[in-house]
Length: 141
Image (cartoon, rainbow, N blue to C red; front, side, top):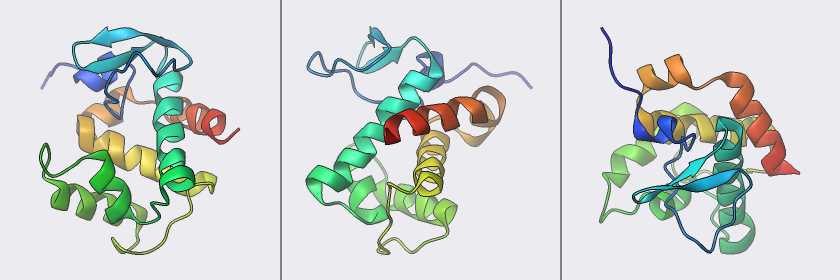
């Protein structure tokens, strides 16, 4: 069975970050309609990681429910399902406190969001572990 690479992965933007000219992300090369495009997957992963870290550092969002509600608001998404899937992927409760400065936790969250945004089969096929690890490492610097 063949299928097309999802937009987020075509754009090297596995989290489907919305484009904003105010964000001069490392490796950003424009946009594809609503969503940012990145030169390399590692750049898109870094931008996703930095955004999530800023949710904790600047907005004091510390649970999967808080983070995903901000990331994928109910007016645009099935946020309840998104929260359940991400919490299960991290093996935590939706209201358990998580620490995104922990490399493993941030990596799991990036994978969970990427999988929800693009589909598990697409991520298995096109999202490389080394790109996620390198992007997360850059986000944590």
